Amino acid sequence: MEGGPEIDYFRRFVERNGQPALDVACGTGRLLLPFLRAGLDVDGCDVSEDMVAFCRERAEREGLSPTLFVQPMHELDPPRTYRTIVVCGGFAVGSDRTHDRLALSRFYEHLQPGGTLVLDNEVPYSDARQWSRWLPEGRAALPEAWPAGNQNRRRASDDSELALQSRLVALDPLEQHATLEIRARQWRDDRLVAEEQHVLDLGLYFANELGLMLDRAGFEVVAVHGGHEERPATADDDFVVFVARKPLSVA
Ligand SMILES: C[S@@+](CC[C@H](N)C(=O)[O-])C[C@H]1O[C@@H](n2cnc3c(N)ncnc32)[C@H](O)[C@@H]1O
Image 1: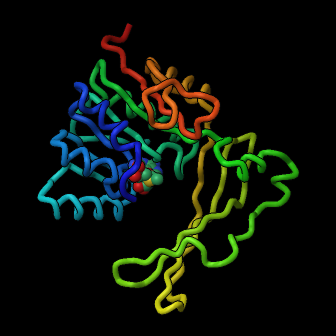
Image 2 (image 1 turned 180 degrees about the vertical axis):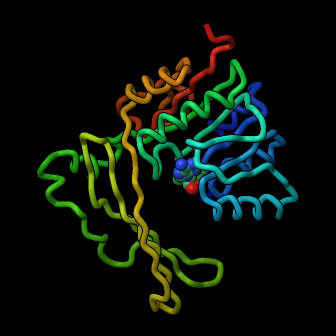
C-alpha cells in the first residue's frame, strides 16, 4: 500500500511536539517511511515478521535505519517511551476483546505523561453489505460466496498478476465479531500458479464503546475526528479517529 490521506493526518500529530513517536501495526511502512523521510523520530512495530522485514528493507534502500520490532500490540514492550503513539488500520485486527483492552493499557503505559494516542477505527456500519449481516436474515446467508470472476487482478513487477479477495464467513452481533476469509492468487500467462487462503478475525467497535474503553485505560479523549481529517466525526464517516491524552499527572 502507498499513499492515502492518513499519512498527513497522523504526521501532523507527530510534528506538533509529538516526538519520539511509535507507529503501532506499521505494516510495510506506508506511514512510517514518509515520517522518516520528513526527519521525524519514529519507531515502528508490527505483529508480522514479514511486514517488519519488508519495512526494514524498504527503509534501508533509502538509507534509513529505523528502530523496528516484532510484537503484538497487547504485549507491547518497546525500548523507550513516546510522546505519540499512532495506530492506523491495526486495532482489533486478528485479536479479541481481552487483547484489545490490554493493547490500550500497553499504549497508555508506554506513553510519556501528557503524550497522545491517535488511533483509528472503522465503524461497523461502514460497509452496507456487511452491516446487513447483523440481522438474522442476513446472517442466514453466511458464509458469503467468493466474488465471481477474476476481478481486481493487478500486474506485479515480475509480470505475474495478483488478486486479493475476501468474503465474510461469520458475524456475531452479540460478540461484535466478524470472521473473514482472505484469498490471494497469482497468475502467470493467464494460468493460476499460486493460491493462499487465510482467516481474519475482526473486532467491531462503535465509537462510544471505544471511547469508554480508552477512558477505562486511563486516557482523556480530547477529540474524535472523522475520515482522517481534523474535524469532528459525523454519522457519515466510515472511520473515526480517537485523539486520547495520557494525563500529565495521575490523581
Ligand atoms: C491494514 S494493515 C495497516 C498497516 C499500516 N498501519 C498502514 O496503515 O498502512 C494492518 C497491520 O496490522 C498488523 N497487525 C494486526 N494485528 C496486530 C497486532 N495484534 N499487533 C500488532 N500489529 C498487528 C498487521 O500485521 C498489518 O501490518
